[in-house]
Length: 203
Figure 1 (cartoon, rainbow, N blue to C red):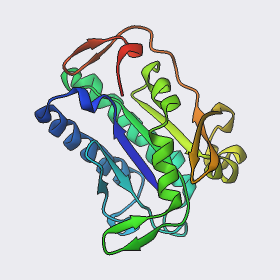
Figure 2: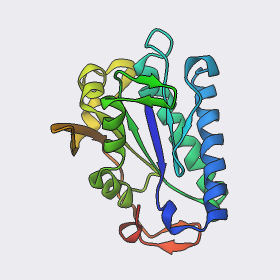
Figure 3: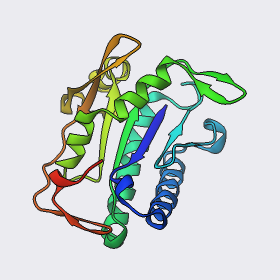
Figure 4: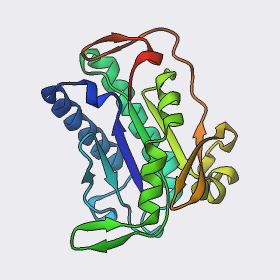
């Protein structure tokens, strides 16, 4: 499962939010196609207002390594290109990835694992990482994904880049999130609606 959030969305007017939402979904669709992930490999993305939740089908259809080694790098690359070509519409994303059990009723998916990935995404530590990063996207992966995939270096994933920077609580249980190293932003970032220093930008 993958959940995305557009940083600083609450500081923008509704027309700008709509533009960023369209771009986010376009880039997500393009990244999935580039990674070989077709519509039948995942549920339709679930809108979160300023983000999206994507639930992928079992690992025999979409290996967890594909999410980390192809989809997320493709999404970050496409977002980087978008920001370079359209600086007036530049924005950043937070992303959280996890694998676990999902339950469904007539209103949609639910369960502890969904609670966890959303808590990881909204963790203040991840927001601080993005605020100080030169990259347009900050990623956190769950401890389960780290221990089962990342630390083993499958699909050339560099597990040495990940550190346990995020700590969250779900139903009284502590969970760790692992974040890959980012480059520090060398100068104020130009974002739509004005120029702010990375450390001053709310999430």
